[in-house]
Length: 481
Ligand SMILES: [Zn+2]
View: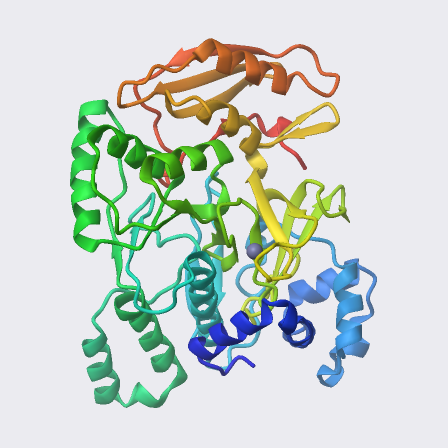
């Protein structure tokens, strides 16, 4: 465990995701969980959490004696923690002892400026590559060698859920390793695997983000971007959801040839159904959903056009919490994740900042892992009376109208909102009054006062500093807790 290469680990993930692999998966999970808790005992922050949960840790921390059953019991008592708490204890409080395991530091790009630095060692990076490969296999049914094109929202930040060393060539890396004698080290191997992954395994092209300031300007960018996509002839296109929509609209209008493209994957798992179905129709492709963050890597992936995604259970424990307790399958709550593979900086019952639910029932594909549906970010989820209104519900209304290229709902006061709509860049007019009245109905639920929405039609919406777009900009008092 931990020493296996990413290819071996990816093979194990494939076996363990099926019904026949269920017992192997359970065994692997409980071994990993107990190993993780034992490492976490090295950190002050975790010991503090145990204390708060009323667990006497002295007994279990002696000589790493935590057994698997005991680990599960301890785990079930822990209260979920957020970015803020981890950040306030970083680095001394949250890092395990460094045993020269090739640690790298990476900062996330929080939408609300909430950055978090995450530390990963080489075994975590190998696990990240294994889960990235597994996601690719489940999504496309293919393994090595397929070409991918990525259009991330921000060139400075690497793609959500992907991990890799800094840009350099494979040969230069090998030469350097031979010269300085580091080629035998695990870090060298891990870095080489990262290069291999990016350059040879996936044939990955990364294109610059799109910047929608005006229709003519965007048209020019679209032509360039489609030109680059045609050069790469990707089997899979991954991009920010709005980019996929704009590329679809452009293609529908210009009848761009893209028969090589089979699958399209929006980043982050946040794209709503109506947006995805427009993309499917316009591009003639299947969509695959994947959920990942830069601190956790790839966590879940869909096996077909559905939004619900199979969780990579061998690597992650995913739970849904509401009001401090785990909810039943099917109910909406905060997504809480434990990364079973990061022993450098244990993330245990970590509130990622997203809202979602576990879908009840089995999937027809033969995998029996839990399936996760992501419905929006915490800061975009609105409490209306006793109900949570998610970004996904709001997005579904706006994007079901073919005349909408982008939008945002801003909260002005408790019951007054401003709906900003960017009409289609390519000539279709939206029925804005219908969109407004459907949103008013959605927000007037749960015994609240009637909601008033003011409309504003804009030529474009300014992205957030990290290049992403928000569905709603709510007053913090209105978010879910
Ligand atoms: Zn499935």
